[in-house]
Image (cartoon, rainbow, N blue to C red):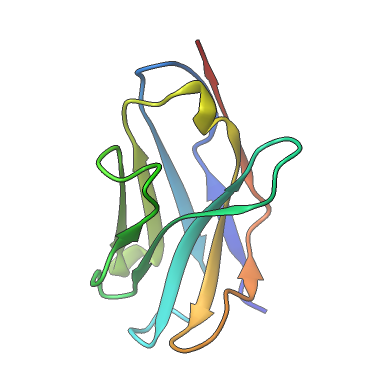
Length: 118
């Protein structure tokens, strides 16, 4: 098991910002990746961003590129998702997840709700 604990969600107005955090208790060396995903009501879970421990190779979905930034604090075993210029369509439950280098994301946090009002 790799406990992942998200925090930082909440209610914000359109155009506002939030920072999500995900604290990991394992698989925190550079052979593992961390990702953020989200699931809106009635929709499938979608990829948001991912990064490798060590901070390299950040990658974003087109829907958040230029607005969201994923980062890692290796000393704190924590991955962040800075979300700026939020839009109502960003409303979802956000999950962090862990994956081995060549594998699928297989450990998931409990999720944190982000609600953006118009």
